[in-house]
Image 1 (cartoon, rainbow, N blue to C red):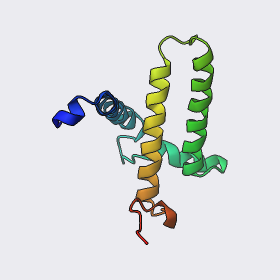
Image 2 (cartoon, rainbow, N blue to C red; image 1 turned 60 degrees about the vertical axis):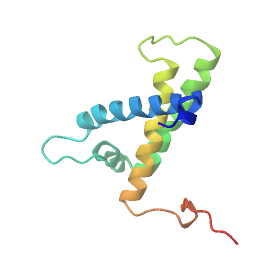
Image 3 (tube, rainbow, N blue to C red; image 1 turned 30 degrees about the vertical axis):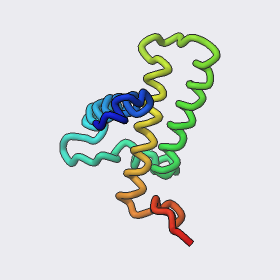
Image 4 (cartoon, one colour; image 1 turned 180 degrees about the vertical axis):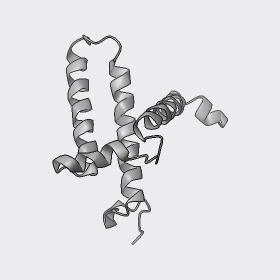
Length: 119
């Protein structure tokens, strides 16, 4: 990290958040992906059994998390083991999961190119 980013509380916090989220994702993905023929998206592909695409399944999970965050901003959590921090970290991971799923299933919309074209 450079001197400028060390002094930037936002960048420092984001680095710590992303590191923690990645560690959580590694552990959870090991539980969800299966041991015999590991598929990192196995649990998400299972949504097709009820007529829901994996992309939509991820969005539903994200919406559930957003609803929870909205409630937790107004009141304390009843489930103390799952704080607002845990819920927000889940949202970070679901965003990354959706990006990875789209990338690895070649369903990237044309407008999602991260490079901005100059006129």
